[in-house]
Image 1 (tube, rainbow, N blue to C red):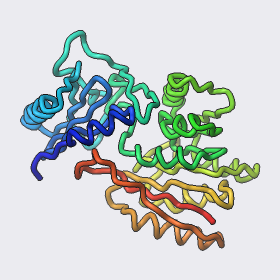
Image 2: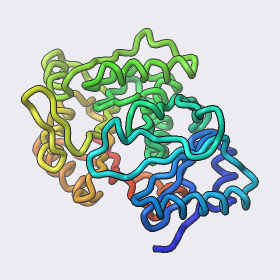
Image 3: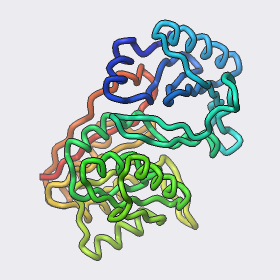
Image 4: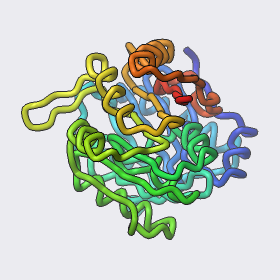
Length: 302
Protein backbone atom coordinates (compact mmCIF):
# COMPACT_ATOMS: atom_id res chain seq x y z
CA UNK A 1 0.00 0.00 0.00
CA UNK A 2 1.36 3.41 -0.98
CA UNK A 3 0.63 6.52 1.03
CA UNK A 4 -2.99 7.70 0.94
CA UNK A 5 -3.94 11.26 1.87
CA UNK A 6 -7.16 12.95 2.90
CA UNK A 7 -8.12 15.12 -0.06
CA UNK A 8 -8.24 18.90 0.20
CA UNK A 9 -11.94 18.77 -0.69
CA UNK A 10 -12.68 16.38 2.16
CA UNK A 11 -10.62 18.48 4.57
CA UNK A 12 -12.69 21.54 3.63
CA UNK A 13 -15.90 19.55 4.04
CA UNK A 14 -14.86 18.47 7.54
CA UNK A 15 -14.00 22.06 8.42
CA UNK A 16 -17.46 23.11 7.25
CA UNK A 17 -18.91 20.51 9.63
CA UNK A 18 -16.90 22.07 12.48
CA UNK A 19 -14.79 18.92 12.73
CA UNK A 20 -11.03 18.96 13.33
CA UNK A 21 -10.33 15.37 14.41
CA UNK A 22 -9.61 13.04 11.49
CA UNK A 23 -7.04 10.85 9.76
CA UNK A 24 -4.69 12.79 7.48
CA UNK A 25 -2.71 9.99 5.87
CA UNK A 26 -2.05 6.24 5.96
CA UNK A 27 1.17 4.64 4.72
CA UNK A 28 3.01 1.37 5.36
CA UNK A 29 4.04 1.33 9.02
CA UNK A 30 2.69 4.77 9.88
CA UNK A 31 -0.36 6.99 9.93
CA UNK A 32 -1.10 10.59 10.94
CA UNK A 33 -4.13 12.11 12.64
CA UNK A 34 -5.23 15.65 13.25
CA UNK A 35 -6.39 16.45 16.77
CA UNK A 36 -7.43 20.10 16.79
CA UNK A 37 -4.27 22.17 16.54
CA UNK A 38 -2.07 19.08 17.07
CA UNK A 39 -1.07 16.07 14.99
CA UNK A 40 -0.32 12.59 16.30
CA UNK A 41 1.85 10.26 14.20
CA UNK A 42 1.66 6.54 15.03
CA UNK A 43 4.54 4.43 13.74
CA UNK A 44 6.06 0.94 13.85
CA UNK A 45 9.75 1.78 13.46
CA UNK A 46 11.90 4.91 13.76
CA UNK A 47 12.34 5.00 9.97
CA UNK A 48 8.54 4.98 9.62
CA UNK A 49 8.32 8.02 11.92
CA UNK A 50 10.66 10.00 9.66
CA UNK A 51 8.60 9.02 6.63
CA UNK A 52 5.43 10.01 8.50
CA UNK A 53 6.76 13.48 9.26
CA UNK A 54 7.63 13.89 5.58
CA UNK A 55 4.11 12.79 4.54
CA UNK A 56 2.61 15.23 7.02
CA UNK A 57 4.74 18.12 5.77
CA UNK A 58 3.67 17.40 2.20
CA UNK A 59 -0.01 17.40 3.17
CA UNK A 60 0.12 20.52 5.32
CA UNK A 61 1.94 22.45 2.59
CA UNK A 62 -0.73 21.48 0.05
CA UNK A 63 -3.55 22.47 2.38
CA UNK A 64 -1.98 25.58 3.93
CA UNK A 65 -2.61 24.30 7.45
CA UNK A 66 0.19 23.80 9.94
CA UNK A 67 -0.10 22.14 13.36
CA UNK A 68 1.21 23.92 16.41
CA UNK A 69 2.54 20.67 17.84
CA UNK A 70 3.39 17.24 16.43
CA UNK A 71 3.29 14.24 18.77
CA UNK A 72 4.29 10.65 18.06
CA UNK A 73 3.75 7.22 19.61
CA UNK A 74 5.11 3.83 18.69
CA UNK A 75 2.60 1.14 17.79
CA UNK A 76 2.87 -1.79 20.22
CA UNK A 77 0.79 -4.91 20.82
CA UNK A 78 0.21 -4.28 24.53
CA UNK A 79 0.39 -0.52 25.11
CA UNK A 80 0.87 0.92 28.58
CA UNK A 81 1.61 4.28 30.18
CA UNK A 82 5.17 4.09 28.90
CA UNK A 83 3.72 4.40 25.38
CA UNK A 84 2.34 7.88 26.00
CA UNK A 85 2.60 10.20 22.97
CA UNK A 86 5.66 12.42 23.04
CA UNK A 87 6.42 15.76 21.39
CA UNK A 88 8.55 15.71 18.24
CA UNK A 89 7.94 19.24 16.96
CA UNK A 90 6.59 22.42 18.52
CA UNK A 91 7.66 24.54 21.45
CA UNK A 92 6.57 24.84 25.04
CA UNK A 93 6.14 21.14 25.65
CA UNK A 94 2.88 20.98 23.74
CA UNK A 95 -0.68 20.83 25.11
CA UNK A 96 -1.38 17.60 26.96
CA UNK A 97 -5.14 18.26 27.00
CA UNK A 98 -6.07 19.67 23.58
CA UNK A 99 -9.70 20.40 22.74
CA UNK A 100 -11.05 18.99 19.48
CA UNK A 101 -14.36 19.49 17.68
CA UNK A 102 -16.69 17.04 15.96
CA UNK A 103 -19.86 18.34 14.30
CA UNK A 104 -19.58 21.47 16.44
CA UNK A 105 -19.28 19.58 19.75
CA UNK A 106 -16.14 19.83 21.88
CA UNK A 107 -14.14 17.04 23.48
CA UNK A 108 -11.04 17.11 25.66
CA UNK A 109 -8.20 14.72 24.93
CA UNK A 110 -5.38 13.62 27.21
CA UNK A 111 -1.96 13.02 25.66
CA UNK A 112 -0.38 12.34 29.05
CA UNK A 113 -2.41 9.43 30.44
CA UNK A 114 -1.33 6.60 28.13
CA UNK A 115 -1.52 5.18 24.62
CA UNK A 116 -5.12 6.17 23.90
CA UNK A 117 -5.90 9.88 23.79
CA UNK A 118 -9.57 9.48 24.79
CA UNK A 119 -11.55 9.81 21.56
CA UNK A 120 -12.35 7.64 18.51
CA UNK A 121 -13.07 9.72 15.41
CA UNK A 122 -13.82 6.57 13.40
CA UNK A 123 -17.24 6.52 15.11
CA UNK A 124 -18.17 9.95 13.74
CA UNK A 125 -20.74 8.57 11.27
CA UNK A 126 -22.44 6.62 14.04
CA UNK A 127 -22.65 9.69 16.26
CA UNK A 128 -24.33 11.54 13.38
CA UNK A 129 -26.88 8.74 13.09
CA UNK A 130 -27.43 8.79 16.84
CA UNK A 131 -28.17 12.51 16.78
CA UNK A 132 -30.70 11.96 14.00
CA UNK A 133 -32.46 9.30 16.09
CA UNK A 134 -32.80 11.78 19.00
CA UNK A 135 -33.44 9.00 21.56
CA UNK A 136 -35.26 9.83 24.76
CA UNK A 137 -33.05 7.51 26.84
CA UNK A 138 -29.59 6.34 25.83
CA UNK A 139 -27.72 3.50 27.53
CA UNK A 140 -24.02 3.77 26.72
CA UNK A 141 -22.20 0.56 27.66
CA UNK A 142 -18.40 0.64 27.85
CA UNK A 143 -18.89 4.39 27.68
CA UNK A 144 -15.23 5.46 27.99
CA UNK A 145 -15.15 9.30 27.77
CA UNK A 146 -18.80 9.39 26.62
CA UNK A 147 -18.50 10.87 23.14
CA UNK A 148 -21.72 9.08 22.12
CA UNK A 149 -23.50 10.38 25.20
CA UNK A 150 -22.42 13.97 24.64
CA UNK A 151 -23.74 13.75 21.07
CA UNK A 152 -27.06 12.33 22.30
CA UNK A 153 -27.37 14.79 25.19
CA UNK A 154 -26.79 17.68 22.79
CA UNK A 155 -30.13 16.83 21.13
CA UNK A 156 -31.98 16.33 24.41
CA UNK A 157 -31.37 12.70 25.36
CA UNK A 158 -31.14 11.47 28.93
CA UNK A 159 -28.07 9.22 29.22
CA UNK A 160 -26.80 6.42 31.42
CA UNK A 161 -23.07 5.77 31.07
CA UNK A 162 -21.36 2.60 32.26
CA UNK A 163 -17.61 2.06 32.43
CA UNK A 164 -15.32 0.21 34.82
CA UNK A 165 -13.13 3.28 35.36
CA UNK A 166 -14.33 6.08 37.63
CA UNK A 167 -11.34 8.14 36.46
CA UNK A 168 -12.46 7.87 32.84
CA UNK A 169 -16.02 8.83 33.79
CA UNK A 170 -14.65 11.94 35.50
CA UNK A 171 -13.13 12.89 32.15
CA UNK A 172 -16.49 12.14 30.55
CA UNK A 173 -18.21 14.70 32.78
CA UNK A 174 -15.70 17.26 31.54
CA UNK A 175 -16.88 16.62 27.98
CA UNK A 176 -20.46 17.33 29.02
CA UNK A 177 -19.45 20.59 30.68
CA UNK A 178 -17.35 21.67 27.69
CA UNK A 179 -20.58 21.70 25.70
CA UNK A 180 -22.60 23.51 28.39
CA UNK A 181 -24.56 20.33 29.13
CA UNK A 182 -25.31 20.02 32.82
CA UNK A 183 -24.76 16.52 34.14
CA UNK A 184 -27.85 16.58 36.36
CA UNK A 185 -30.19 13.89 35.02
CA UNK A 186 -27.34 11.93 33.46
CA UNK A 187 -25.98 8.88 35.30
CA UNK A 188 -22.34 7.77 35.39
CA UNK A 189 -21.86 4.26 36.76
CA UNK A 190 -18.36 2.93 37.46
CA UNK A 191 -19.34 -0.73 37.35
CA UNK A 192 -19.33 -3.95 35.33
CA UNK A 193 -21.62 -3.67 32.30
CA UNK A 194 -23.10 -7.15 32.72
CA UNK A 195 -23.94 -6.54 36.39
CA UNK A 196 -25.59 -3.23 35.49
CA UNK A 197 -27.62 -4.74 32.62
CA UNK A 198 -28.95 -7.49 34.89
CA UNK A 199 -29.97 -4.98 37.58
CA UNK A 200 -31.70 -2.81 35.00
CA UNK A 201 -33.58 -5.80 33.58
CA UNK A 202 -34.82 -6.74 37.05
CA UNK A 203 -36.02 -3.18 37.63
CA UNK A 204 -37.72 -3.01 34.24
CA UNK A 205 -35.58 -0.13 32.96
CA UNK A 206 -35.93 0.35 29.20
CA UNK A 207 -33.90 2.36 26.70
CA UNK A 208 -34.74 3.32 23.13
CA UNK A 209 -31.07 3.45 22.14
CA UNK A 210 -28.18 1.29 23.38
CA UNK A 211 -24.50 1.57 22.45
CA UNK A 212 -22.52 -1.69 22.46
CA UNK A 213 -18.90 -0.91 21.57
CA UNK A 214 -16.89 -3.15 23.91
CA UNK A 215 -13.12 -3.57 24.10
CA UNK A 216 -11.65 -6.64 22.44
CA UNK A 217 -10.51 -7.87 25.84
CA UNK A 218 -10.85 -6.66 29.42
CA UNK A 219 -10.48 -8.05 32.92
CA UNK A 220 -12.36 -7.05 36.08
CA UNK A 221 -11.76 -8.73 39.39
CA UNK A 222 -11.89 -12.47 38.59
CA UNK A 223 -13.89 -12.01 35.40
CA UNK A 224 -12.66 -11.53 31.85
CA UNK A 225 -14.41 -10.30 28.70
CA UNK A 226 -13.45 -11.53 25.23
CA UNK A 227 -15.48 -9.98 22.46
CA UNK A 228 -15.29 -13.00 20.14
CA UNK A 229 -16.71 -15.21 22.88
CA UNK A 230 -18.98 -12.83 24.77
CA UNK A 231 -20.57 -10.43 22.25
CA UNK A 232 -23.70 -12.61 21.80
CA UNK A 233 -24.12 -12.79 25.59
CA UNK A 234 -23.70 -9.00 25.80
CA UNK A 235 -26.40 -8.43 23.19
CA UNK A 236 -28.79 -10.83 24.95
CA UNK A 237 -28.44 -8.84 28.16
CA UNK A 238 -28.86 -5.54 26.34
CA UNK A 239 -32.07 -6.69 24.62
CA UNK A 240 -33.59 -7.21 28.06
CA UNK A 241 -33.29 -3.44 28.54
CA UNK A 242 -34.46 -2.35 25.07
CA UNK A 243 -37.82 -0.82 24.15
CA UNK A 244 -39.79 -2.61 21.38
CA UNK A 245 -38.49 -0.21 18.70
CA UNK A 246 -35.01 0.44 20.06
CA UNK A 247 -31.90 1.21 18.04
CA UNK A 248 -28.81 -0.74 19.11
CA UNK A 249 -25.30 -0.04 17.84
CA UNK A 250 -23.19 -3.18 17.42
CA UNK A 251 -19.52 -2.29 17.11
CA UNK A 252 -16.12 -3.91 17.62
CA UNK A 253 -12.48 -3.27 16.77
CA UNK A 254 -11.77 -7.01 16.77
CA UNK A 255 -10.38 -7.74 13.29
CA UNK A 256 -11.81 -11.27 13.23
CA UNK A 257 -15.42 -10.02 13.54
CA UNK A 258 -16.87 -8.54 10.36
CA UNK A 259 -20.13 -6.70 9.74
CA UNK A 260 -21.69 -9.92 8.42
CA UNK A 261 -20.82 -11.62 11.71
CA UNK A 262 -22.51 -8.83 13.68
CA UNK A 263 -25.65 -9.15 11.55
CA UNK A 264 -25.68 -12.92 12.02
CA UNK A 265 -25.38 -12.53 15.81
CA UNK A 266 -28.08 -9.86 15.87
CA UNK A 267 -30.49 -11.87 13.70
CA UNK A 268 -30.11 -15.04 15.73
CA UNK A 269 -30.57 -13.36 19.09
CA UNK A 270 -33.50 -11.23 17.92
CA UNK A 271 -35.20 -14.40 16.64
CA UNK A 272 -34.61 -16.14 19.98
CA UNK A 273 -36.46 -13.23 21.65
CA UNK A 274 -39.28 -13.46 19.11
CA UNK A 275 -38.65 -9.99 17.67
CA UNK A 276 -37.79 -8.74 14.20
CA UNK A 277 -34.84 -6.50 13.42
CA UNK A 278 -33.52 -4.51 10.50
CA UNK A 279 -29.84 -3.74 10.04
CA UNK A 280 -27.94 -0.97 8.31
CA UNK A 281 -24.35 0.24 8.14
CA UNK A 282 -23.19 3.82 8.58
CA UNK A 283 -21.72 5.65 5.62
CA UNK A 284 -17.99 5.18 5.08
CA UNK A 285 -16.07 8.16 6.41
CA UNK A 286 -13.90 10.05 3.97
CA UNK A 287 -10.90 9.92 6.33
CA UNK A 288 -10.67 6.14 6.86
CA UNK A 289 -8.29 5.95 3.85
CA UNK A 290 -8.07 2.18 3.87
CA UNK A 291 -6.79 1.98 7.42
CA UNK A 292 -8.29 -0.29 10.05
CA UNK A 293 -11.67 0.84 11.34
CA UNK A 294 -14.26 -0.87 13.55
CA UNK A 295 -16.96 -3.16 12.22
CA UNK A 296 -20.22 -1.38 13.01
CA UNK A 297 -23.88 -2.05 12.37
CA UNK A 298 -27.13 -0.52 13.59
CA UNK A 299 -29.78 -2.98 14.72
CA UNK A 300 -33.32 -1.57 14.64
CA UNK A 301 -36.00 -3.54 16.49
CA UNK A 302 -39.53 -3.56 15.14
